[in-house]
Length: 432
Ligand code: FE2
Image 1 (cartoon, helix red, strand yellow):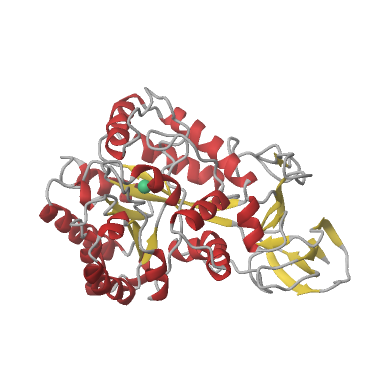
Image 2 (cartoon, rainbow, N blue to C red):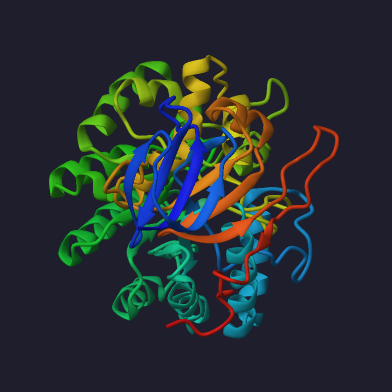
């Protein structure tokens, strides 16, 4: 009668002791003590069952490359970009695919089933694009992977970047990217925003720009992005990523800017793990945190969704495909410790990320997708506090991964979980 049933679940909306019955990849019933046969039964044991995690901002072409060809000694964004420039000519598609697939295995075990990854298109040949298009194909049964054509060295600053970006879009890359604050001048940066939004409008594609990832209070490209979003009617197809300069804006300017962002309908994606380490590097003391104005954006009605950005690459030596780590850092770095805000931080890395990526609403409901994560936590706040163990990861009614419960706080689990070979084919193999 059912393919899979998750028994004794607690849902993010507070409902407890309910069963979630799935058939043909959809949730067909949510109710207490559902009767009927099921091929697979998952006992949630009263734990939280939530939609899968979503990472709306990542760099999969660089992931797991830490130390290649050397380490980032200063820890700065600029040394990271320089280091990436040294690594790029040595990249092979096979190596990028191998690292990306390892990351995707880790992601699945962490219940992270939707990722938007930027891929550098500054220089030809487009090794990263070719590799990640292949990765997108292989992981499709398990992960919704979107790719962003990202001219890392600047649309105008890198001579071939625009032609390469167009070529990447022609090859099937999903989203138009950019980095206006890295162009030679503020004027070039603003012009790049206009050009990129027009390319996206012409092609009917989303836009996702690294926007004002700097401590410079005069870096105001998000203003141009909001204006272009409104002018071209791009609305919720647009994401402004990072936006760290907003931390340093004059308060009066911020009170003018935030309503323009809200009016445009764009999303904002801060990346707290990496920006708490990258920003403020030129400061002595007091040292700025460099996170964007999350509370004010939320209050204005803007969808704010946190991203991971990097894992073990030229910019960030840590990370682990764990969106609860991201939410946990956001709670501290923003900071936001009211119960409402901590619960919202959890939803930001599930529902908020899905909205930013333009994915269907993943809320667990009858008729909705049968994709969910069983967490060893009672509620969203406890999940963030403990970075809760993913007891089971389910996609379209199939169990992809299970992890043993954490026995005690001092007895840390082996992470990631053991992928279930019965239902999970590692994306390193061919998929049908
Ligand atoms: Fe980024």
